[in-house]
Length: 85
Image (cartoon, rainbow, N blue to C red; front, side):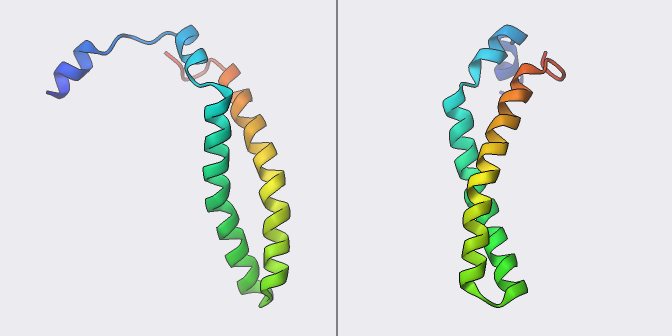
């Protein structure tokens, strides 16, 4: 069955791959990853400081800055042909 799936899958091209991942997908990936990352940051900050208020403040700043950085990073990687068939 796996061979059948592989045989019917059309070969992708750089041009097609470049357009298959739209900015909205990158935004959704950014948000989902930041939820995980921010929860991790808040837990670490809480553990280190012992203060939930400080941990939440750190997590809030980190949430915004890293979403912006990740989105830009993701979009730049879509411009790089390396690793695309």
